Image 1 (cartoon, helix red, strand yellow):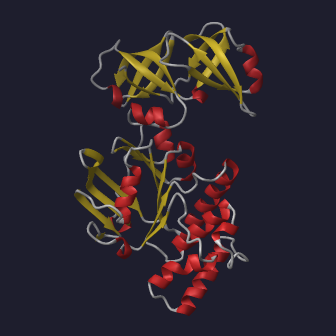
Image 2 (tube, rainbow, N blue to C red):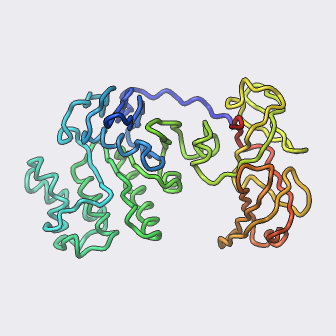
Image 3 (cartoon, rainbow, N blue to C red):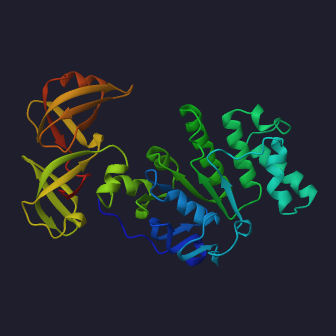
Length: 367
């Protein structure tokens, strides 16, 4: 599961760059020495739990907050001390922040008017973005006359009509119901790709991040723990926090057997699993380690396995069943994802054996 080193990116291909940026609120360090490069046209997601610093980072890029240390660049220009109005950014807030007294068309045109764009150009651009966002026919409505999805489109249209260098989005789907949220995610990603606008998106929803992003920056306690594609973040988490926060995971008690080059072998009973060696370097053979496995990486059988467990619950999920099991050889509950019929071989209260896949998991020193 080792990853190839990232190819160097030319400076002119970087749209947003943070170099050692720190932000404090009193004695609290909200963002600590953060460095990040967002490529031109990229959809970059800042992902992490509440209070991790992701919105602080977004607000620093927007210019709503001033950095206490470090430098910030947009399209190669130093903007650390530049006002928000001069940064050429589009912003979509959690609550959309539409003007309630203005029509849809007036809301969309607002940013162009403040930039003193000619009237004819304003009308042309508004028509274009109305068509792009499927808002034709709603021009004269007020925000209160729109559905949540329509309000979302107006907010996006207002941000895009000014043709920003960078589009910033702060948890914009949080107020939408599940189905509308999913459809808006697809629409936003399609529009972003079509326009090629550099986008920085904030969310605490891991599935949203995995489905939307070109790359993800995983954050916690004011620090960026890992930056990578959704596949890299999911398959090759760099530390325990990233492994635990991204996706569903079971932690099995194992032992380090050996390290050979970039691959380590860990053992659970008679089973052997190959994992990336880097997190385990310096450990001696026989040292206890925690094996982090995904639900799809586990197999359940009636009888003995690498881990013996007691089935605690079945959760029907339509196309599959999530089987939860308890074992003294695991840190917390084990989750195995199986086809519906396979769950019949693992009745609640019954003893089962669980086997991990021979590769694809990660291991870290036991805490």
